[in-house]
Length: 163
Image 1 (tube, rainbow, N blue to C red):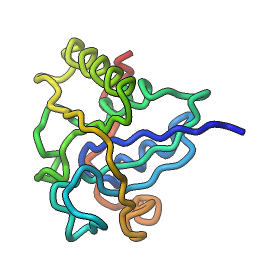
Image 2 (tube, rainbow, N blue to C red; image 1 turned 120 degrees about the vertical axis):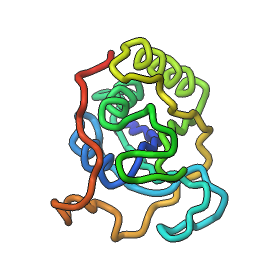
Image 3 (tube, helix red, strand yellow; image 1 turned 180 degrees about the horizontal axis):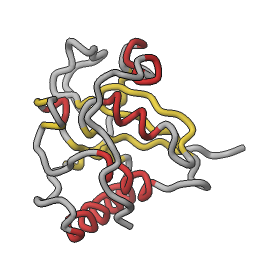
């Protein structure tokens, strides 16, 4: 039996992030939802303080948390506070939701690598928040860009690997 792991990140509209991560090596499943907010059972219309994020289920024999974060920093602008593309507000913040001290340490290391690379004009504004709970978004938001291939996204691969 394979022991799959989960990673939780937010970097703007969850549709675009899900679409790019779904096909990454080692990624077995993606789900969009809400993280880090103040209400239970958040919805698209009512998620105060929550970020639009994704839950990534991955096989640690095929990829790693560090490689997931490397790709995360390649597909969104981590230097903007509460903004990605046309989306503005704390729902669109750049955040890594760490599940333990090891993930927190890895996240800090990757942020330093990204900052030291100077590929972005400014330093990453990505925050680190302890993971508490992932609330799956409504079915209409799951696999959105698969069902709506011309739908909105502000995510794209901008750089090669940072690692």
